[in-house]
Length: 344
Image (tube, rainbow, N blue to C red; front, side, top):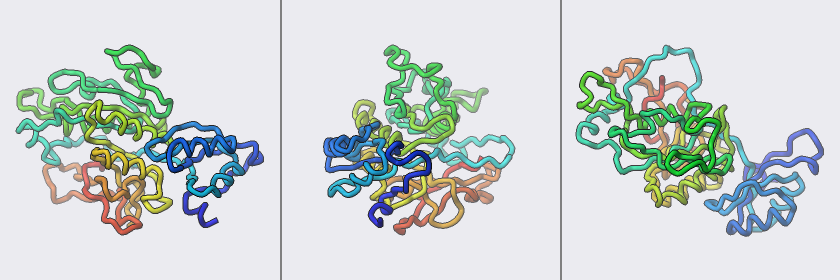
């Protein structure tokens, strides 16, 4: 019983008899082939191949799960839910913040440091084809690829023909969270229309390239299996697109040590592949020890949310938002590593 609890398994939910109902689990073995063979041996239905953590996701009955949980060398995890780290609505006025000036990035822009040559992978709710996101400051296309980890398909891009089209090309972000994030990170929109040559851009890295990975649905909900499959794709395609940064603005409640969590294992594999992983601290603060998964991984950059009190020119009234999760982690690591504008 302790072994099952330690790896995040839950009792089967009420409803039809267990032998007639399939739940989703992640099964890890010594390698992908061993995990696949184990699931097939008990008649489970494999839904995801997660080579990055030597695992598969599968639908199994309770008895099938329990059989595998007893096999030496196998680990069985629940395919947990995870959600994007959206700020809870509180009816604040819709006032914008010029993020680059608030954090001093415009000084880098004036020196020509605009992210050119760096590719950011945005693992979130998809992508909408707005000009300031799709084009860099020179007007050149900078979306290098778009992968739907939920459907396990490549999204059609204009120059290579339709491999898979969402309902409307370039408009598959029903939730809007990823488009919001991409705007902050990459927008090439100019905030000074009277003197555009001054290069006051609305995004932090307005010339960086973008790789889109959709792992969350229209309500901002996802599963461990889809997120891990998205991370696996990013690592496999890192050399192709020179992916330097992976943005993970989502969070789940820790249920184990950070190194036992399968999503964290995928994040650590991305870090080992040379990718800078940036994750949200989570939005379950302000109590201590509320840092979520994968923000509790010590090797990555975990970011909390601050507010400028709607006075971007006055740093003395800035404060940590009440919803931003705080550390330390359960293993005693100090988190978050830094805070950034996230209050409104």
